[in-house]
Length: 142
Image (cartoon, rainbow, N blue to C red; front, side, top):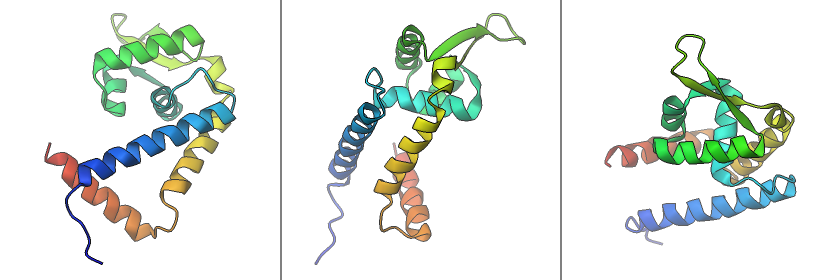
């Protein structure tokens, strides 16, 4: 069987769509019906980083600042995150987890493990490194 080398953009888009649906189902299964996968990315990032400015959060999740602001505003309305002034510079607002998010930390760990486990099913450690290396190389072309 000949390996196709064109159509990669289509396949990456299909993978993204399938992963998005999988994460959406997992969020519903965990009772987090009010969240979308993009919200989960923000929360998982904040579990690691504790508090970030909107600018830094945008960079970490690879979204425009305006999109990040919109997502964060919804998370604030839902009680998952809050904005506070930076102790270093009162003009800078930091986004941090609210108590509601802290109570779901284990759920997000489970969700992340589930999604990554499914994605990498049948992959060796070397396969994972090679996939990421090649995807990063392709991304650098844009």
